[in-house]
Image (tube, rainbow, N blue to C red; front, side, top):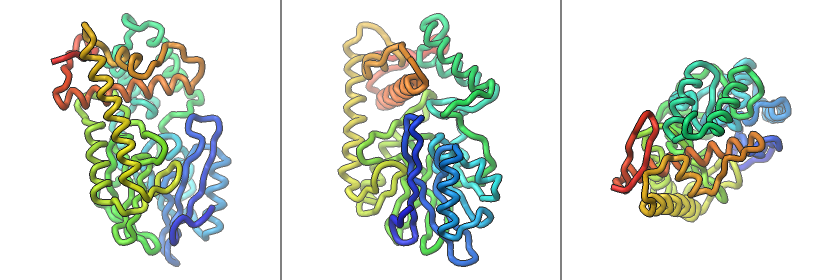
Length: 341
């Protein structure tokens, strides 16, 4: 643990078994007698919990006086939220994070998740008739999840207080406001201190990584919302210190954001050309295979998650093209087909 900025302490957690091997958790001790803040909880294992507990003890923070701010519901950010709640901490999260029960990494147990998976798979062109092998693989994984078997990317259930845009959170010398960072997830939320010019940006902006914007739900404008969010950060917070949950702090905001936007624009343009050059309509799955070079072979869980991510990232890009009138969309028997105007 070390002090990243005055009164802001950083703990790096590791888990080599997952696709994401490192995440940064931030602690801000409160003034004497006041509550303290933890931003995210990291992976849901005992080793990570032990490290966070040790950091709390070093800073004199008790569970009963701790607020935990969950930026989004992914496993590397919320894995220990239920444990902290049981220990007496108060959890905060944007309820929009539970907007869907099944999408990309977020996957819950229960009937809603089963129903949504069938709709999502059909929507992107993975059906029992069109893609029987892939259909079977996805249902095998969902069966494991519903039976209670270990699944790294299961979205945990935990009690929380709702967070909304503009809500205020004061800890130590800092006065934060909650800011929605739509894009990486539907309800990802960060914390902004205008006086100290600091933004905890979660997975919205990362130096050296292109954050994935994944969805399989129509007309939610996730990628467009991501572009708008990045534009706001670039124009309004260009001289701020950005503290992401992965990699290093960001001071060259414009450079990092321009790189992210260029990567997405490049991929969107590729998909536009693929559809324009095709003599027939294509499903999301078909476009994804051409754009990312993915295949049906999935040897292990990381391969499966990568496949899932590329499909949902493709859907986001196609939805953006459709929303900007560059391509057309037709729905037949629950499956979306993309073509030229």
